[in-house]
Length: 181
Image 1 (cartoon, rainbow, N blue to C red):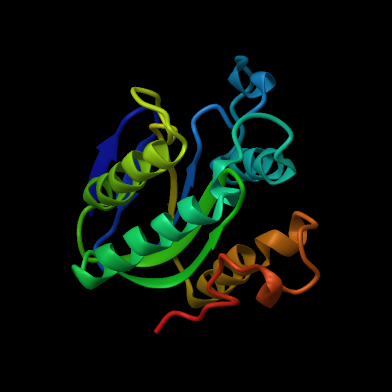
Image 2 (tube, rainbow, N blue to C red):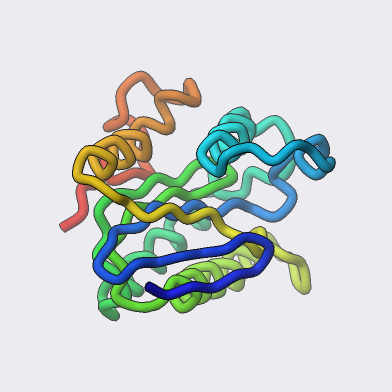
């Protein structure tokens, strides 16, 4: 099992699939930055994800097609470099969910994808010296086949849950509409 930490601990048992979420810097409302009673990580994640799905505050840069394409390209390039096997993904307006089987460390994977896409996106947006992604990411290792199925469905249904489409296949930035080869 590998371990790393920034603000939160990150465990990655060898041979386990991982559910990862990255979000744009500044994408959460101010009340999420106030001290509060610690919830379970699952409840805390659900609260954050509902706020992100509402996309009521902060940047929504991932809805720009050139930025979304650059993220998909970066995922494909990291996959071709055998950093992971990709099982499911969705790009929302301000966050990304992926389900993958890591073949490199999580810090290497996130650095590869977030670093490359931040540079490209900031060029597209004509921004320099400004943070694109939030430093921290959320990760959860998958423990059972049932959980794997639930997480995959959660990822692909995220645009439906957010009220953006009626059918997961209608969302253009998802493994539901563009199956992984």
